[in-house]
Image 1 (tube, helix red, strand yellow):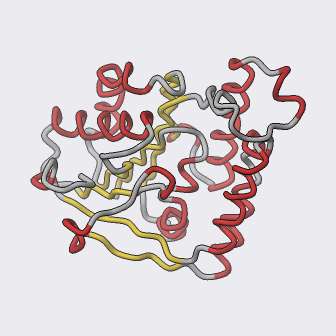
Image 2 (image 1 turned 90 degrees about the vertical axis):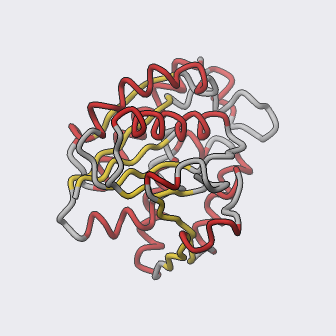
Length: 227
């Protein structure tokens, strides 16, 4: 099975489909591709957290370089082929400006996909919404009617709604997977420079053992709150 995963930023691969991705990799029978849509350069812009001292000396180009390197290290950590990692390098926080270009970039990658993995629509984060729009837009243009649409929602940006309850399922991880996720988190040292965000992320991975995902079909597009 060819699986293509859209991650809006470096690190969303972990907090979105991360747990179940470990299972797909362990099954050793899938051709797994990852599309990293933005470069993550805006992660220190908000100023509403406590940052390490060196952040003040970093340009956004420096941040983007660091975060893209982390995305590459993540792919290496997971044992996926580097040629299966597709970097769109769109500027972080400007996702909606790049939807049309993103659709064109995505089409040759997903044209023969079996499972498309993407963030939910009605997303509070602009880049996550843009990533959804790119994935669905490309799928529509290619008329991918016979594939599985696998949707994740990072809790900070929204949640699954009751209207598609029959499409949702809970995925429970054991302590072994939980330890792998915590080790994976340590790759993202750009996030360790953000005090409270880092603490929240680490705590989330320590505490959460059940994740919610949903599966949809082509004819479901636009029918449900999350798809």
